[in-house]
Structure formats: structure tokens, C-alpha cells
Figure (spheres, rainbow, N blue to C red):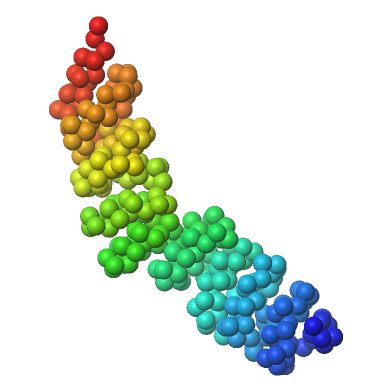
Length: 256
């Protein structure tokens, strides 16, 4: 680095493109701060600057004010994903993103958990206005939270793809099947799924759902103590006849 570029007195407001390119690699945070404010900073230079993990919050706030540099979509995403970007900068920014940019934020390993949550919540709020093709991609590649939300999608293909998402969690599956808007197709798919149906907590959630078949209900209830089964069925939306059959079968298996 030249003596001029290392100096904190460098006037970046009149710097050449070469000087700016050097400045964004400076070890001096004052130099970097002036580079972030310089009108000559381009989107590509801003993107290069955002590759640094040692940027201060002040530098990132200054970049957020740079309309010209943030005209580059990749720069906006990089700013939102930077681990040191203040929440009051990143959260409003990501709410302006398009669908798949939000997905990138939610999946970035560097993004703080609360910012990822905002990205997911923004996506969930938009699901009703996204195209089937977009929802299918989100079901396949989105976060576990998004996959869980898409288990309730009205299109069976999207629901089934979401069910195979590697990020989908047991908790999300349980929450989906007990949701009042859960479809018959979802309950049937989960109750026969090789990964999810053997899990005891998922079985209990299915026993609380509305659309579980009698045959599957009998299979899941078979290993439960009668007292636990009665407690589960008290909060269940299964038809009365199915509940009665389950209780009778349970009493028979425990009778001497």
C-alpha cells in the first residue's frame, strides 16, 4: 500500500477509482469509512468491500446510505447478510428484497438468527402472492420454516416437495398436521411417510389431527398407555367414532 493510501487524511471525495480500490482494502477504518461515503464508490467496489468481515457498524451504516453503490442488487444482499450490519439497517433492507433474495438471506450461515427470522417471516407473508413455480422452488430449497409453511399449501405437489426438504424439522411437521387448515392429503402423506411417521411425537400430533384414518390411528395408538391416549384424544379433532374405536382397542389390549 502506498503512503498516500495508508494516510487517514486521504480525501476520498476526489479520489480516483484506483485510490478507492486501494482504500477499501486499507487497515485504517477511517479510510474505509470515507471510501464508503465517497460518491465515486461503485456497486462492484461496494461488493468487494463487503467481502471483509472486519467492517465496523459505522462503515456498514454509511454504505446503507450510498444509493448509487447499493443500486447493485448483489451489494444490497451482501450488506443485509454481513454479520456486523446493524439490525436497523438489515431488517428494513431485506423487507424490500425479491423472493429468492430473501431465501438467500434466510439460508446464509453468516446472518444472525433474528435477521434470518425476519427474512422467513417476510417470505411466509408473501407466499399467497407468489407463483406456484416460486413456491415449488421454495419448498425444495428454502429454510425449514418455509418448508413447514408450505406443508399447508393448497397444491399437493408443493406440499409433497416441502415434506422432502432436508431442512424441514419434526417440530414444523407436527405444527402443520395439527393446524386447522391441514389438508387430508397432508395428514395422509405424513402418516405414511418413511421418515416422519415412525416418530412418536409426530404420531401423537397426527392423533390430534382431524383427518387421520382409523387404520393409521390404531397403529399409532397401539403403543400408548390408555391414560396417555385418553389425554391425547381429549385435545384431538378426530371424529368421535374414531376416538371411541381407539379407546376400545386400547382397553382390550390392557385387559387381563
